[in-house]
Amino acid sequence: MNLKLSVEGHHKTLLGYVAGIVTGVTYGLNPLFAVPLMKDGVSVDSILFFRYFLAVIILGIWLVFRRESFRLSLHQARQLVILGLFFSLSSFGLFEAYKYIPSGIATTIVFLYPVLVAIIMMFLKVYPTWQVWIAIIATFVGVLFLSGGDGGQMLQWRGLALAFMSALAYSMFIVIVNRSKSVHLISNSMLTFYALLTGVVVFSVYAAVERIPLFGSIHGISSWGSLVGLAVLPTIVSTATLAMSTRLIGATKASVLGVFEPVTAILVGAMAFGEAITANVIIGIVLTMAAIVFMIVSPGKAKAKIL
Image 1 (spheres, one colour):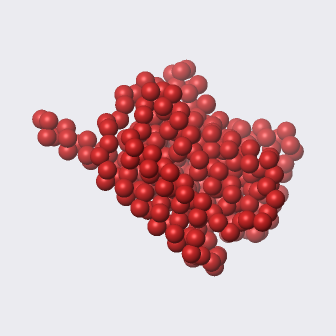
Image 2 (image 1 turned 45 degrees about the vertical axis):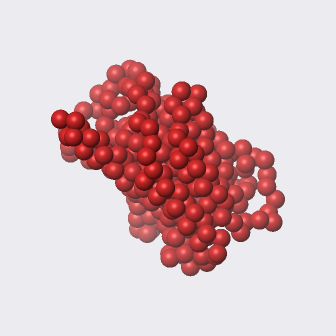
Image 3 (image 1 turned 135 degrees about the vertical axis):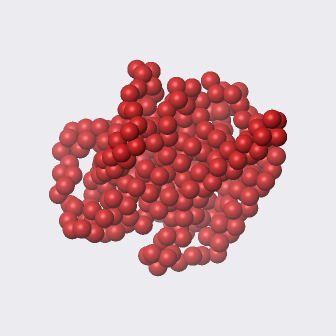
């Protein structure tokens, strides 16, 4: 019996790591779909709205097909609205930060979120092992190398604040998914659906208040194809696997695996848009991959009980 439980535990841990890697890779595909849209003149506000709106439609149809119940308790509904607000705030903060500071700097600041997750978890009396702290430091240094090359530009405090807000909001999303007992009773797909539905409401209200014409800048099948791609991979798949990884291996380790986001984004830029891969990028990728491997193979403490 103990052997069976041990095997099941190792299987769940492995699944958690795989899910975390899938989260990073799929979220890192954002530029593959977003850059062509921006080049076609689609506004950031339209991209954010339709990213969430189409994701909700597609995932909703899938959930109906699987005959999953959409019923929630009042407490679960409140928790999911909070999760949706944090997730939407993270997306909004990052895209707005791009208006004021270089994307590389914004990416580096946003990748503070593994550190923020670890600090928040410490307040909840869940202490990362020294192996995880080494992985966090090494991956952050790696991201500094990955984001190199944007120097020489003026940094506005508003952009720095928005990027930090994005990181903090993403951290809170991860921590709540890991620590909320009521959220754990909801499937990953349903959690993703309601979190994204909250995002649709948030961006709809924002567009109405700011009088933003969401449909005005979208033209042609290619634009809609990019929007669907953005809704499926970096949104539905990424959010669902993030929830899965956070539940299986814990908030801190799942957040460290997010380093696959900037790595994937840089590789996409090189292969799809002909962007150069510099020595800094190679050093950054080697550092981050080494840190991830070290964290995975190193023994650690068992995950703390959920509140």
